[in-house]
Image (cartoon, rainbow, N blue to C red; front, side):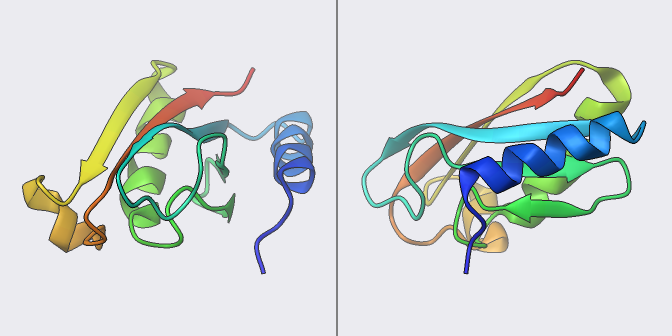
Length: 107
């Protein structure tokens, strides 16, 4: 079962208050068949621990990797995943849709 958005964002806040680097990934746009709706969140701490989902599990690994870079650099990123991308099959987004995920550092 997925955690609620309130729990996900509360966890991000708790990690940040504990002094950890934290990023929030948010689905900002979907096209076609998308596994998670706009507004879905995934929070990631500097150790790679995460909570939530932006894709029902299809691309979480890729988003976590990018989020760790965002935590280190402080520069947000807009990621796009879709079946047309060569990484789609590797990442697992073979549902025929596309998603855009905005990743930003907390704090």
